[in-house]
Image (cartoon, rainbow, N blue to C red):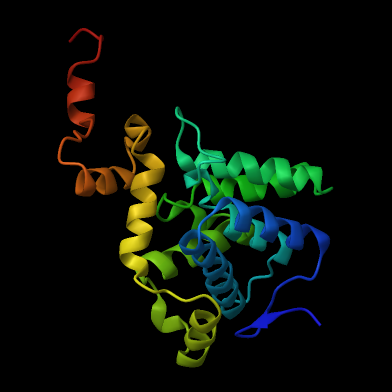
Amino acid sequence: MPESIAGIAIPDTRLVREATDLVRGAADETVFDHSRRVFLWGSLKTAARGLAVDPELAYVGGLFHDLGLTPAYATRDRRFELDGAEAARTFLLDHGRTEQDARSVWLAIALHTTPEVPLQLPPEVAVVTLGVETDVLGLGLGEITDEQRAEVVAAHPRADFKNRILRAFYEGMADRPDTTFGTMNDDVLAHFDPAFRRKDFVEIIRNSPWPE
């Protein structure tokens, strides 16, 4: 029998089992539990909207979305979202999924910190953002019933989650601050590092090499 949490079945497939093992081995408990909750919240919300989502793709999108914060997958010169997106794409292609499938999950992960845009894209993209916005920001939490919320959190606890996930974000981006330009991620660096100075979009335009 497949595992089921709050009415959402965890696909009992080799791909899903190996995705779980990979992320469990790379991420700490905070990021792993968060990633599973993202899959579950996103699946609950897409189901409530009547959207059909490929469960394997939703699972990999949820599980891999913060993989770029982990030491094993983080790079020094690009956004952490891209690190996770690339890892997911490679994983899916290696497991026989199509290029289109891999591209959908790549987009889901690459765009999960970009508000609004993913929700206008196919369900396999939107599902990750719906889950992230629920777990991190509490957006649309009222769409989840008390019973669903209790079952998900019992399976994947949120002990001191707000502080722990902020710390995980900071530690995953502190050595590549330039990659946070134009994103909400620079808020995290500014919170933890008083010496961090954001790039100013207006000043970049004013100081560009174009003559007036």
